[in-house]
Length: 74
Length: 475
Ligand SMILES: [Zn+2]
Image (cartoon, rainbow over all chains, first blue to last red; front, side, top):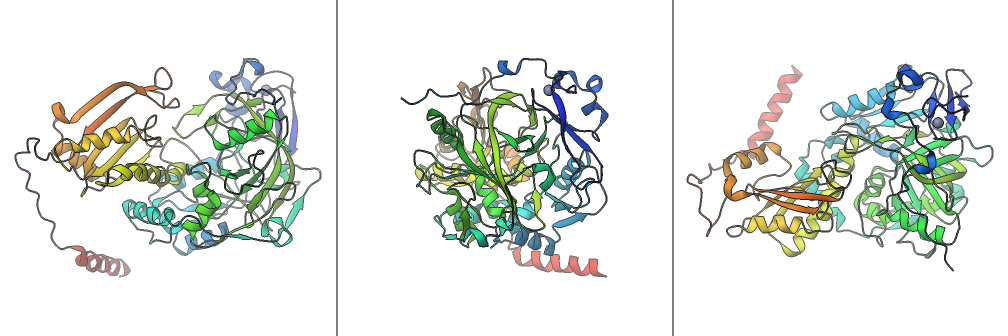
């Protein structure tokens, strides 16, 4: 299914309400790591209503790395 | 004083500092609304929610450290203790380092009452929720994260216990934000140099002092566990992790164990952070979960963080003041107390004796050259030793009556700055703004009317009047 943040077809069901009540389902995107519940506010889970600045339009590998991967020890 | 979170919650409840919300609620947005409300109230209480839709029999606790009343109770003080007195109490306890460690057999440790090693799904056991609206996922914001330096696997004291934000990205996968200067970054780097996974334990719902110490900057080779024991005044009870050689708090509500995957980085963030703004997306390390264990009827304690002030400001307030105070006091015994509670000390108020004309300004220069102050302390206010720097009415009185702008206000340009501070430009550069609000002393020119009104001996009557007030309410 389509991720509500990066809009790529890389999302899927993550889990359902653990008590079996069917109260909600939760989805996750394997590309940008966004997760959401189907019971959240519309402007969080509907792509067209989300604030543009919180959408993910870059390529994941272009993000900054805060702790660099060090050289391997010899 | 408190062996675990439960004992502290009982203490809070006894003192009217814990409430329970029984209404049926959705995790979003209601949990964050409750977290914000609890911290905004005067003497805001801790809140337990145990009727969350889809999460039958699961409990969330918020705002456990979210008021000065709660912090005072954690220190074993009366809940109305002034912040300055809490500061002095904390200083005294700090000097009792190291406290005692007590090892509990793993099979008897409460945190191992329920153990899950197969088909791990964090969401089946923990009532996770999105803290702020634009956060990328559910975050653990109040965990004690335990790692060891893989180069010193037997060194207890360099075993690190810290609080780092963690984003749950899958049933058994969690991102962790390590910044270059964090102790844990050193451990990750040493493991990655050898291409080895780094064992990690995440303890949720701990005794309140351990949580407090996990967010205190202590020297790399001093143990947070021994500090927690010293300040708590009872031995710290530890047990062995199930999957590795880490020492974990035996009475934690939940312990998640896993490994930081070597040489892997994945997208993390945004997350609403302590300056009251969202921090953006970065590539961060990722943990693969190997086990989750918990007590029967576990309580998931998490932290709501919003525009200041919220719980994190109470949690980090005093523990920013104490290290700074210690460093000043080494060379300047005139320093009386330090209030560095504003965004990790970006604004810092120091009360000091102005030993001779201009001396207080020298104290400011010292603040600006302490290890913490070099980049953090940008607005530095000096007040006299009889002014309580935690009492902002008194601080404003000093500014109003003792500052001569042409002599007492200094800006030093182009100094180090704190990169997360939005005013730092370029990131990492800043200015020092010093306001000397102490009374001028010789050989400086003295103020014209400087004879202070004497304080009468009023303390005994405070109790008399307070008792009368209580009695009046009782009628
Ligand atoms: Zn996505």
